[in-house]
Length: 319
Image 1 (cartoon, rainbow, N blue to C red):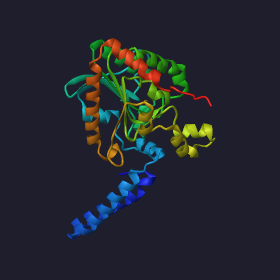
Image 2 (cartoon, helix red, strand yellow):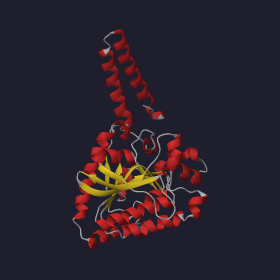
Image 3 (cartoon, rainbow, N blue to C red):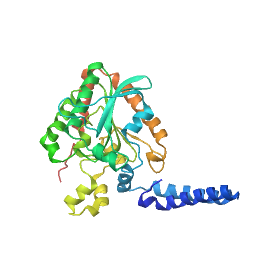
């Protein structure tokens, strides 16, 4: 298991436990008492480290290479997934995937950003940074869901929309802006979940939902901590200070009313026990879909409108 800098003491103890188990098996020696002592020490250390995570450390967990991605959750949560391709205008963007599926028998349209597991796959998936055709594909699938009266589930996990010249030439900003407008008027329930990185307009471009949820170690922000640090401090090395200032974790965003629910993760992150996280995620999605589906089209659109109008409300007091 690869670890982050602040997890090194835990990784070292895990390695020691594995070595003792292997050595005991090979040499037929009972190391159980020693293993138990190390396990107790490790559990205590985990409690101390993971109970006091900084916002920057949560960002690092959100980016962990072993963290489950969209297709992982789709495979764990749904059945009969049928992927749909293309935006019918330019190409099929592999950084964004989606299609029909069943969630405990409930037919849905599920989609989300998809990163790669290795260098080759990451290049193919463009590191989860969608092009305009990715956002247009997303909107095409959402309209299809609306046509069939199916709820839409969006899994958000991107550093941001791709900022390359080609993407800009093909209307990146316009594609995102049109998604914001069209999603606000979509006459079918929409649940969005930030499962990892929720970066900038790349995340917001598919994030106009009736319910916005977050995993505990995900982040959702107008800019990455490194980008913010480069602007404010002229140095990306101040990313940890920027992460704290941006208030980008679920704890802060729930308080500000930007997200509606924070789904807990196991100690160390979703990659430590993906199946349990998928189970929690499925339960939360189904609960929210059931609640939203009880609304009429007018109530659905009115509540969605009010939800996003409330964000960023500022009250100034006269001195």
